[in-house]
Length: 304
Image (cartoon, rainbow, N blue to C red; front, side, top):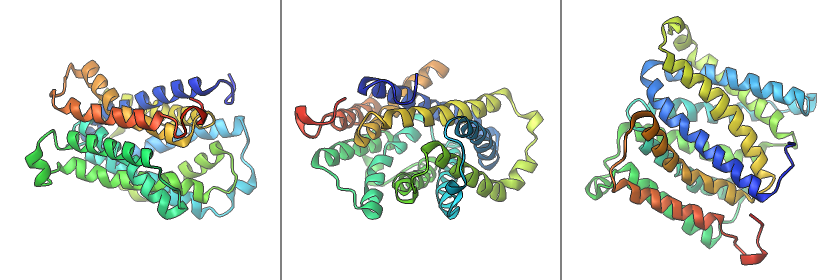
């Protein structure tokens, strides 16, 4: 099946798979994070994922010299994603997977803010309400349904660290559109990943050298392969597939499914059910998803 085959329903199916695969990175990352330096793990992740995306770029569009113009663009984008992934795994050392996933659902709201600052992208009333519901649901989970903790702003250290990674991720999304000069998405992503790998290698070389790779437990290698193949290369393809079929707001909406998928991952891996009150936050994020999936213009809106 070619990248352009299928309709809106296929786009929704792709984003369902995307959100489930992204959720797995929280549950598996939580298991691996205490066992390896975040810098070392992220260097290898970028190396493996970059190799896969590079092969895809050569096999599809090819890498033309014009795509290498203004390489500073790739350094900006690669730096933002490097910050995101490193801080994600620092955060997962202490944050549980569900609350970290809830922090991730704040990204669309912050991305909308960066979109206005960088691109002057407007925000409709329905999108604003949906993003606010999603943010409230995320905060409910982050503060573990404890109003007193919220009033004291008693946020966990891991969630606080990961939040700043999500700020970098939120800036990355509109920055891609601002800096892209017509390069194919797969080539642009390959350039970004190579720049990110360069930055990470310069930053994390001591951690990579200090890591005893032969002594790492199997869960670290399982997480590394999953993160590089499923949560990087595969999600990239699914995201590109969906963006050709769905409006950007609908693509963004699937972020709100990640905490629910993480709960299922945690049940499957550990048999760990979350407290019932936390599910209220998941329901709120689901309402945000429904609002974002609804057409802005009723029956005349974009299909899907």
